[in-house]
Length: 311
Image 1: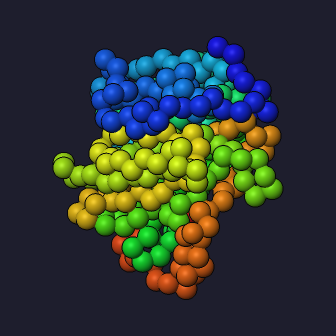
Image 2 (image 1 turned 120 degrees about the vertical axis):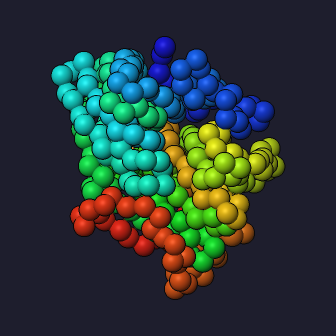
């Protein structure tokens, strides 16, 4: 499968394909299997692997780089280059920040879990083959953004500030019940000094058996204006346009894993806000943060927690 060049524009995703409800991307073994071709775009992919106790799975990366993130349970990852990593897991996404590992393109790796669990393999097409590495949970920056009912937690698993990947950016967001995140709405679909184009995947997990939330993605010209109800296990694709808010219904905490990559020469997270709502970032600069945050941590005094106002 050929990879588009860095300067090529991502393909257009049809509106009907943006929201992928839980089960619509499942295979016989796994809850989510989304390739770039399945998404109808050029860079991002996501595979959520479900392993039984003691099961081992072999996965080729081909022309994509990857990041293994435990959703539940811990695992051992071994690569065809001879690298191996033990990833301390978690009970679920609301329990703790997990260990993770980065894997370069053009390798095959195995993933094994003694107790079983679910493990996200975030991926991005890339040009440069780099080296695998492990990130301990204690080294993951935990950032609190927003204020009041728009307070949320960002775990910068493989943020743009992490050296090593060629194209891939991976973060996770935890939103307390009743709060809004990805707000003010922002976009990253143009190449400007203040914006870097990135495709983006939202993979939602919702606390509570009947839990749900809402998500909106829209463009200034109205070509896209999608507001959907999201449930546990849903995926939403953001090819372009403003996205936000993602709102957690009262009584149900919300988590989502964000996978981002794009055609730009710079691996960076630079965004522009909807001008109609940008004033909110400044208004929050001195406002109190929801006391329920942080919702989870690395269980280590070395964990880095910072306050940010950007969405």
